[in-house]
Image (spheres, rainbow, N blue to C red):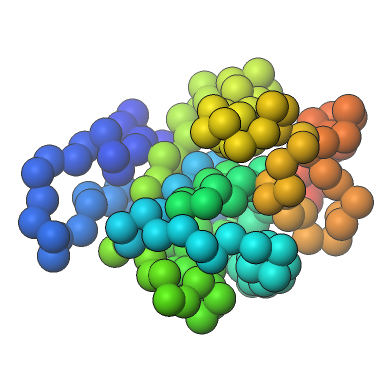
Length: 191
């Protein structure tokens, strides 16, 4: 059962620079959890986002998804932060370990920029996992470059996509993407 308060950011209180954001119980991030992650760079550093970094991101993301039994229905890389949505496909999925893996393996590609101490997370409630509500969250992620004034429409942004291991042809820009995504997700999910 997923607790009511899902976002570590919702429970924030003033913290010192050495403290960590409060996290939900570890089991909340395991199994078939759906989590919206935001990874921010220290001092909102820019200058690291490039086609080469995007390629490295996709490679490390693919390894994280395969290793921790996850799929990423969408991600967006912004000039000073990143958003990704992960869904567990097995009872052995562990998103906290996966986000540590992802951050660790991207450190070199980000240099000289560095990560903020912690990634921000929002574990989706059951009601947010329903197709319509889920699509709203996914579109929020994909629309980030539009809200920032980087592009007029999100499909024109070069640094967004998805990662579903074994399905390289999937792309959120496709008209039938969500129908295909849910079909693949239901096929991949292990009880």
